[in-house]
Length: 281
Image 1 (cartoon, one colour):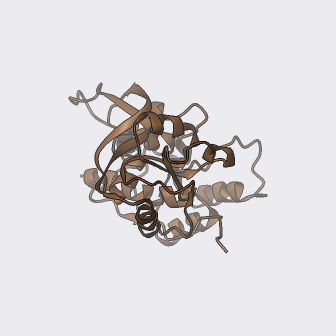
Image 2: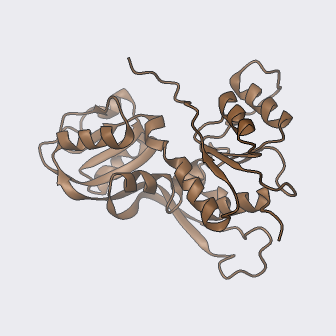
Image 3: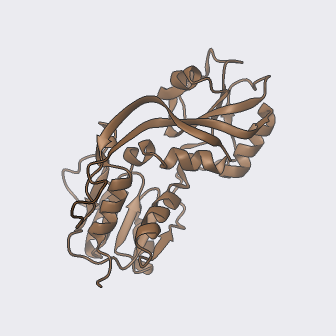
C-alpha cells in the first residue's frame, strides 16, 4: 500500500470543513504547490505561514504546510520577494512545499476552531449561534460511493455553551488568561452576576456581539473588537477580548486530529515558530 498523498490529506480537511463554508471575503484552500501525485513526507501545522514557518517545514522535511490564515489572502500581481508573503511563496516553491489553508471554513465547521476554543475553556452543551448555512460535503479523494459522499454540513461563525461551573467575572478573566496564555484581557465593566453561558468566536468577532446577546450569553469571548463595540453593554454581557493569535492558537491541534485520525502514517508537527506580530510591553 502506497504512502498517503497530499491530495488525500487535503480532501480529508475539506470534508471536515468544506470550502463553501468559508466567507465571501476569504481565500481558503490550496495556496501553493501540487497535490495530485505527491506523497506526504510530513505535515507542518500552523496559524500563519511566514518565512520562519517555511524554514521550519524544510528543517523537518515536511512537504505540506496546513495553515489557518491564508498565505495568499490578497492577490499577488507579481512576485519579487519584497515582502514576507512573496518570500514565503518563493521559498515554498523552491523547496517543493505545498501550502493549504483552512480559514473561515474551519471557523464555521462543526468541531472546528470555535469548538476547540470552547473545549479549552471546559464548556459543555455546545451549539452554533448566529446565521447558519448548509453546504454539501465533498467526496473523499478516491472514494467510490461512500455513504456520506452527498451529506450536507451546517455551520456558523459562533459557538455557545455553558461552563461546568458558574464563575464570577474576575475569576472568569483569570481562567481566560491561564487557558490562553493571555497577558491582558480587554473587557467592558465586569459583570455583577455569575458567568455561566458563554459565546465564542475566534479571531475578529465583533460582528457577532448582537447574536451573542440574543443567544442569552453571559459573556462573549473573541479575539478582536473595535473601540465603539464596547459601549452600551455594561451589565448586559461580559465582553472579553483575548487577542487574535491567542484565540486561534489551538487551531493546529484541530488539523492534527483530523489528519492523524485518518492517516496515522502521516507525521504531523505543530509549528513552534512564534508568529504573533503583537508584543505586549
